[in-house]
Length: 274
Ligand SMILES: [Zn+2]
Image (tube, rainbow, N blue to C red; front, side, top):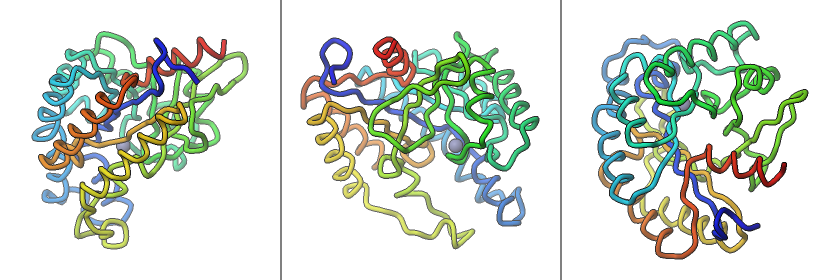
């Protein structure tokens, strides 16, 4: 596999800016007071404290990333969305209320997509072309609804090491799969409650660096692509942001790597396949 300009592998750094909303979903799911202020402040850390650090880091290393933002978060933090967009990063669709699409009716799922676009579009230069499903889950209708609303790629599935084309009727979409071992939440997502969901422990960022760096080396050797799925509230903690910086430095010094936005990878893939 040869990537753009002869690069050996492609890397996408992506961030799901879920802010308070994913915690609110978790509280609701567990029938706990949805407005618990301490739990919600865990999410608030994302746009308020972590995002500026991540944007500085990406700017310093001159890399463009993808940010998936639920519509409700865009309405609550419009300046953050504008700032991300202003730096030239890609903004992707991540639902409106971050409810799991598999739990919705087709009508509700369509409304989530429409409301998400309505919230994002006034804040960004270009209409989002990519989607990542909230809660990493999809319904049987999701792909056709995405195609219907003009999206050109999705990044939710986990069944392949490379992008692939999905045909929905006449329309072609690209799927950019990821893996749980490349998701920060799987290692670091933590709160005291709900205990069954979130007391798995806080992993060492050094251990996670090792996993990600080894995965990068193997991906590089095999000429594959690497989709890192991160969340500002998780990865933007100082020590973890530093770890990410070390990883970016390693990637850049190891050789011919195409670090780019998911949209660029999806467009490249479609051209190759076409
Ligand atoms: Zn999310």
